[in-house]
Length: 158
Image (tube, rainbow, N blue to C red; front, side, top):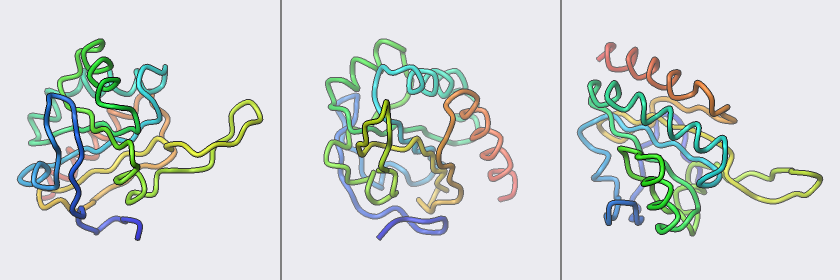
Protein backbone atom coordinates (compact mmCIF):
# COMPACT_ATOMS: atom_id res chain seq x y z
CA UNK A 1 0.00 0.00 0.00
CA UNK A 2 1.29 3.43 -0.94
CA UNK A 3 1.24 6.25 1.57
CA UNK A 4 -0.86 9.33 0.93
CA UNK A 5 -1.57 12.64 2.64
CA UNK A 6 -3.22 11.89 5.99
CA UNK A 7 -1.40 8.56 6.44
CA UNK A 8 0.95 7.97 9.35
CA UNK A 9 4.48 6.72 8.81
CA UNK A 10 4.61 2.90 8.99
CA UNK A 11 7.18 1.00 11.01
CA UNK A 12 10.66 0.71 9.47
CA UNK A 13 14.29 0.64 10.51
CA UNK A 14 16.98 1.88 8.13
CA UNK A 15 20.65 2.86 8.42
CA UNK A 16 21.54 6.53 8.18
CA UNK A 17 24.62 8.70 8.34
CA UNK A 18 26.13 9.64 11.71
CA UNK A 19 26.19 5.91 12.53
CA UNK A 20 22.50 5.81 13.39
CA UNK A 21 19.47 3.70 12.62
CA UNK A 22 16.34 5.67 11.80
CA UNK A 23 12.84 4.53 12.81
CA UNK A 24 9.49 6.38 12.99
CA UNK A 25 10.38 7.32 16.60
CA UNK A 26 12.98 9.72 15.15
CA UNK A 27 10.17 11.65 13.44
CA UNK A 28 7.98 12.20 16.51
CA UNK A 29 7.66 15.48 18.38
CA UNK A 30 8.69 17.73 15.48
CA UNK A 31 7.95 18.34 11.83
CA UNK A 32 10.00 16.29 9.40
CA UNK A 33 10.99 16.90 5.80
CA UNK A 34 11.66 13.58 4.08
CA UNK A 35 13.13 14.23 0.66
CA UNK A 36 13.81 11.43 -1.82
CA UNK A 37 16.47 12.02 -4.45
CA UNK A 38 17.95 9.82 -7.21
CA UNK A 39 21.70 9.68 -6.49
CA UNK A 40 24.47 11.14 -4.36
CA UNK A 41 26.93 13.55 -6.03
CA UNK A 42 24.81 14.30 -9.09
CA UNK A 43 24.08 17.92 -10.06
CA UNK A 44 20.38 18.12 -9.13
CA UNK A 45 20.77 16.13 -5.94
CA UNK A 46 23.74 18.23 -4.86
CA UNK A 47 21.80 21.46 -5.55
CA UNK A 48 18.84 20.19 -3.53
CA UNK A 49 21.01 19.09 -0.60
CA UNK A 50 22.91 22.37 -0.51
CA UNK A 51 19.69 24.41 -0.56
CA UNK A 52 18.22 22.38 2.31
CA UNK A 53 21.55 22.88 4.17
CA UNK A 54 21.50 26.63 3.66
CA UNK A 55 17.93 26.87 4.99
CA UNK A 56 18.48 24.31 7.77
CA UNK A 57 18.62 26.92 10.59
CA UNK A 58 15.22 28.26 9.45
CA UNK A 59 13.77 24.73 9.40
CA UNK A 60 15.22 24.14 12.89
CA UNK A 61 13.63 27.37 14.15
CA UNK A 62 10.26 25.92 13.10
CA UNK A 63 10.89 22.65 15.00
CA UNK A 64 11.62 20.69 11.83
CA UNK A 65 14.19 17.99 11.04
CA UNK A 66 15.32 17.05 7.53
CA UNK A 67 16.26 13.63 6.17
CA UNK A 68 17.42 12.89 2.64
CA UNK A 69 16.68 9.42 1.24
CA UNK A 70 18.18 7.56 -1.71
CA UNK A 71 19.20 4.02 -2.65
CA UNK A 72 22.90 4.84 -2.20
CA UNK A 73 24.98 3.00 0.39
CA UNK A 74 25.90 4.42 3.79
CA UNK A 75 29.49 4.84 2.59
CA UNK A 76 28.37 6.95 -0.39
CA UNK A 77 26.00 8.91 1.86
CA UNK A 78 28.75 9.63 4.41
CA UNK A 79 31.05 10.91 1.64
CA UNK A 80 28.28 13.03 0.09
CA UNK A 81 27.29 14.48 3.48
CA UNK A 82 30.91 15.27 4.41
CA UNK A 83 31.78 16.78 1.01
CA UNK A 84 28.94 19.32 1.20
CA UNK A 85 28.74 19.63 5.02
CA UNK A 86 25.07 18.67 5.23
CA UNK A 87 23.84 19.33 8.79
CA UNK A 88 21.16 16.61 8.49
CA UNK A 89 21.35 12.86 8.03
CA UNK A 90 20.88 10.80 4.87
CA UNK A 91 18.97 7.53 4.99
CA UNK A 92 20.27 4.57 2.96
CA UNK A 93 17.26 2.81 1.44
CA UNK A 94 19.15 0.24 -0.62
CA UNK A 95 16.25 -2.25 -0.47
CA UNK A 96 13.71 0.48 -1.42
CA UNK A 97 11.69 0.01 1.79
CA UNK A 98 10.66 3.66 2.14
CA UNK A 99 10.88 4.31 -1.60
CA UNK A 100 8.20 1.73 -2.29
CA UNK A 101 5.95 2.85 0.60
CA UNK A 102 6.07 6.44 -0.66
CA UNK A 103 5.70 5.27 -4.30
CA UNK A 104 8.74 7.19 -5.58
CA UNK A 105 10.25 4.42 -7.75
CA UNK A 106 9.22 5.26 -11.30
CA UNK A 107 10.09 4.18 -14.81
CA UNK A 108 12.49 6.79 -16.16
CA UNK A 109 14.03 7.43 -19.53
CA UNK A 110 17.51 8.76 -20.15
CA UNK A 111 19.16 8.89 -23.57
CA UNK A 112 16.64 6.37 -24.89
CA UNK A 113 17.20 3.87 -22.08
CA UNK A 114 14.44 2.93 -19.66
CA UNK A 115 15.16 2.11 -16.05
CA UNK A 116 13.54 2.32 -12.63
CA UNK A 117 14.79 5.04 -10.34
CA UNK A 118 13.73 7.49 -7.68
CA UNK A 119 11.49 10.30 -8.85
CA UNK A 120 12.56 13.37 -6.85
CA UNK A 121 9.82 13.77 -4.25
CA UNK A 122 9.43 15.42 -0.85
CA UNK A 123 7.03 14.79 2.02
CA UNK A 124 6.26 16.97 5.04
CA UNK A 125 5.24 15.13 8.20
CA UNK A 126 3.67 16.62 11.30
CA UNK A 127 4.92 15.89 14.85
CA UNK A 128 2.71 12.76 14.99
CA UNK A 129 4.38 11.42 11.78
CA UNK A 130 1.30 12.09 9.65
CA UNK A 131 1.94 13.13 6.04
CA UNK A 132 0.57 16.66 5.65
CA UNK A 133 2.05 17.69 2.31
CA UNK A 134 3.75 16.11 -0.70
CA UNK A 135 5.65 17.31 -3.73
CA UNK A 136 6.24 14.99 -6.68
CA UNK A 137 8.36 15.41 -9.84
CA UNK A 138 10.34 18.06 -8.00
CA UNK A 139 12.76 20.41 -9.73
CA UNK A 140 15.74 20.71 -7.38
CA UNK A 141 16.56 24.41 -7.67
CA UNK A 142 14.40 26.50 -5.34
CA UNK A 143 12.54 23.50 -3.93
CA UNK A 144 13.86 23.81 -0.36
CA UNK A 145 12.49 27.37 -0.16
CA UNK A 146 9.06 26.14 -1.33
CA UNK A 147 9.07 23.46 1.38
CA UNK A 148 10.10 26.05 4.00
CA UNK A 149 7.22 28.36 3.00
CA UNK A 150 4.76 25.47 3.29
CA UNK A 151 6.18 24.53 6.68
CA UNK A 152 5.81 28.12 7.88
CA UNK A 153 2.12 28.17 6.94
CA UNK A 154 1.56 24.68 8.43
CA UNK A 155 3.22 25.49 11.75
CA UNK A 156 1.36 28.80 12.02
CA UNK A 157 -2.01 27.12 11.53
CA UNK A 158 -1.58 24.96 14.65
